[in-house]
Picture 1 (cartoon, one colour):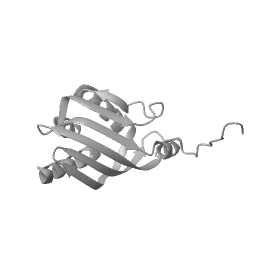
Picture 2: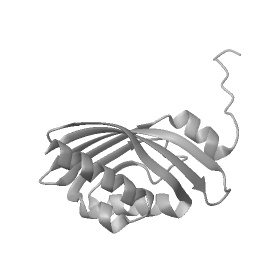
Picture 3: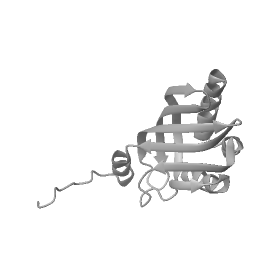
Length: 143
């Protein structure tokens, strides 16, 4: 199971990066619990999504706003039906043509060959700076 799941995750990452959303959604449970821990004011299509239809809309929105230049799993741990994956992504923001490069840490739980739970973390501070095209100035309280 472990090697088969590893191959499935590579296939899913490849399909996701190429915009093959039907392939990706085919492996989502109808009731999937999807959370991408990202600031929703900057990435409104992320955050918590419940169910395949909501995840589909989120993925479609992401691909409408960003061209995926690469989306590669660079580290993976698989145990039974659970996986932890680090993905290196290079995206081009369609509106500004800015290149955004970030790492995603993803934790995925499968049941009966389908994703039932998905958690994603990213260095959201760095990603926001790249999307905005500038550094964010942080001033300590009282300054």
